[in-house]
Amino acid sequence: MNIISIDTITNQISITAEGPNGTYTNAFSPKTRRHTESIIPMMSDAVEQAGFQANETEIVICAEGPGTFTGLRSAYATAKAINLKTNAKLIPVPTLECMAQMFNSQDNAWCDNLLTLIDAKRNRFYGQLFNKKIAKTDTLDEPIETFLKLCDLNKPCIFLGRGIMQIQERVKHEFNAPVIFIEEKSVFSLSMLNFFHQNKEQLLTKTVNDYCAPVYIRKSDAEKPQK
Image 1 (tube, helix red, strand yellow):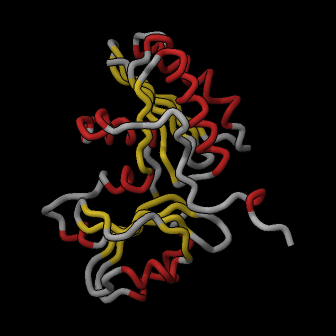
Image 2 (cartoon, rainbow, N blue to C red):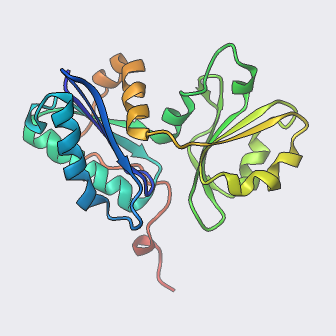
């Protein structure tokens, strides 16, 4: 199966392609958020190494959100273009659930309190709390204090995500149990590909509308009422 996975949820960009020759990834962090200019050449190289052409793509994966406005739009636009050109199956995957899968285990007590976070700026985070493999909250856009109220402070907790080390000193003393902070630095397009394989049956049968779009948790500046 020829698969392309596109990650642009933050300023780091990665493209993973899986095909006859195996799995290949291109990733880099541009100094500016010029996602659109970077995606196509990175994708072309990845699919060539994987042993197929872009017009032979059967599955195209992108992040459903949350993430940056520009990043999510760029990945969705590219994935949708591939979908329309090749009739490849478009698979949006939830960002925070995809992060959580890397640590979710039924046998690991740490996973009773697993908080996945992405720095949303303005002293807020996109986040979701998991217990084992079960989401205990919806995806939220809140200050870190709100997420602490949702956690069991008497149980070990994993904080996993991007941009979270800035809050480490502020929150670790709130817990009466050990706390681990893990800055998520994986090649996220590869994580999304793994998420697809682990949830393939469910994702392949899920209906994706022709007019689907990223799930934006926060309104853009253009959508906010003008003062």
